[in-house]
Image (cartoon, rainbow, N blue to C red; front, top):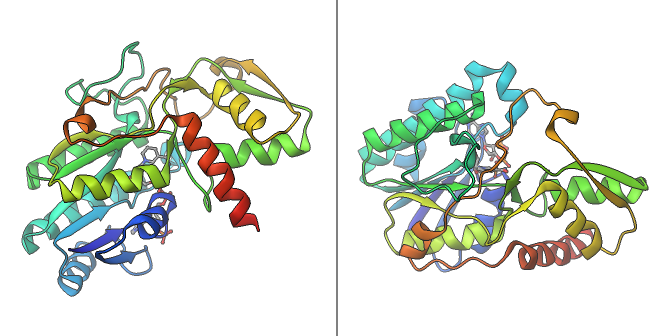
Length: 281
Ligand SMILES: NC(=O)c1ccc[n+]([C@@H]2O[C@H](COP(=O)([O-])OP(=O)(O)OC[C@H]3O[C@@H](n4cnc5c(N)ncnc54)[C@H](OP(=O)(O)O)[C@@H]3O)[C@@H](O)[C@H]2O)c1
């Protein structure tokens, strides 16, 4: 199988390159093809002749999107549409990544793939609109929604907590936002399986289980053997430019339909910590 990955220099992209074995994989970053440029995307697809395309490219700075609306839509929505149109023209299958931010976060039970989109941030709007464009252009495309992505070699929540906990005796972390952390290598392996199983439509893929950011931080510090005290706080005390969903757990039934199993986030965190130790040498 020949696969072209857009966003291969990002957190998920790097994990995809690492995990995807036995196939002919080609990874592209923004220097290889700017996805805002339809011609550049088409040329990259014509050059690489993929059977599958994975779109892991995005403008993922959620707060940055609030002040750079045009850029958010150009990359996350038009970029995704450009990749989808190129996939269609080349007769390639597509998996495009999306996010829990397409929901309003006001639920209290896991979001199904059929739950209505109601984004509350520019980032969420740009990704929600992308999902609609992708489905219009290529109805057989697969949209993989994930959440709270973390992994070695990129900026992520566990890395930030570990760095801060090494320097400070205590940290305040919000306890009123719940979701499911997702380890990039686990997501990458799930994406490989979804490709092999010819997935179409929306599929939710996160690690099993749920927690608040406070609970996640407490587990990170304890599993790493650090002494910093993690204290619960609220979103009101931690205001940021983009509204965060209060509850964004994604139902696992769509991935189970494709026989994709994911480890619990606690197990994934332990894998991350040992990979991080190895990476740091
Ligand atoms: N991070 C999360 O917590 C999270 C949660 C839910 C969903 N997701 C989704 O998961 C996917 C992967 O996220 P990630 O965290 O791995 O992203 P990331 O680490 O921020 O990487 C973003 C990637 O997109 C590429 N990119 C950005 N602008 C581009 C452009 N104009 N043209 C071409 N490539 C461009 C970057 O390329 P260069 O580095 O070469 O510039 C990089 O490879 C995204 O769709 C994201 O929305 C992420």
